[in-house]
Length: 130
Image (cartoon, rainbow, N blue to C red):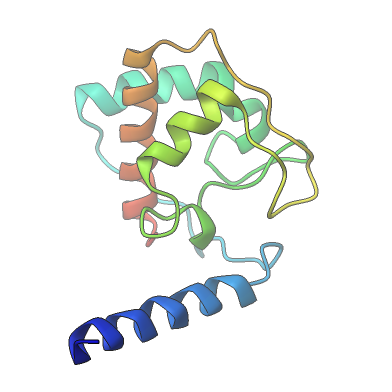
């Protein structure tokens, strides 16, 4: 095995162990919520997010009693790629990090709305250190 491949494997295992050891219930919210300037697409995403997703994931992506925060290391792009959000919205998601139960599919969200929502979430995450 190439030494670079072996080193890469060690890094990936280390990153995986780091995230596996994280307490998803730890308070990892930013000290102060920052709402960044939004592009037109992100503004569309904000409207769609607030109309559907915010009921569980919170208006400021900080979670509620019904769903987890998206401003959390577990949902940063390095941990959950955009495709993970697509699959969760289209197919639902089994509970695996949190106590909230399964997330039902959201078939009423169009592909265009989903792209805008993901854009919004990623911009807000980045502005808040995720």
